[in-house]
Length: 410
Image (tube, rainbow, N blue to C red; front, side):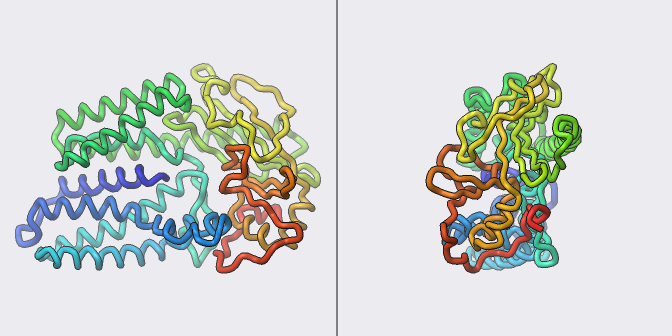
């Protein structure tokens, strides 16, 4: 999940707690307590992304494996929470404030919950997390929510009226305006979900204006949970539907995995990547699935640049488009070739600790191993690795995550 969403949801949670729980008359002044809860909740909701301070060091493979790495585990979240709690107590003391035991309990609770909330929100998209390390080093994927979901921003609209700082109010309003602009003019959101998004934002702003802060904030939290649940249920429906389609259209292939991503503000349209095996080939296919083609057909779902040439040399899928399906190409990789390269090349083996939809092909003068999930441009992106021939030096000090496609490499 993007950091704007993490920050807004954290602030929504902190503001809700501050407005709905009584302050201690023997503790912090009410305004200091409220500012503390809102600020620490917003900060705590971003703590696991401390990995941005070091994940870029050491090149592309380091980023792929360190981002959403150890800081996105339950143990990592606990350590970050303890450090943040200690810093917050020191800052309160430095400013001459003496929190009561109840104030400290709320502060500790916010720092205990919000980093875990961050990990849970990151789980909802298709990048993956491994929260149970070191007990389990496998990736977990939610495949349910777009990484920057405007409907979650809409849930935070009441903050425009409940925040006391004019700067904070302006920032929230600006984010909402950006969401409306992207929905209206970016070409990413069809007309129907764009209208729904605008109506929802208007309704939440009206709620924030007319209702008490407690009611408005409770409405925001409720909308956040409803949006997440709606996408989660739709993801399950899309997954079951695409599994049936794959079995019907490609009866000679076994389905290994499907990667599911919704379009922004749109639980009716899903970008799906199929990982299938046919004899000695791994076949990756990219398709748009419309759950209600009578309302929004697949070719009207729009795409995130899926029709622009990618790094992977995609071929045409030998299956026709329908109102329900719109195909965006496929690529085949020799299974023995992939296994051999991973067994003999440390860079390839390291990359496969991240790659979920693998392809291996010659791109120009380079042998490239990539992940079709994030192939959005002709040039090599962050999830495509140009391998060295002969293989280069083994990467060092990288997390030993279980390869998502260990089922293909065995």
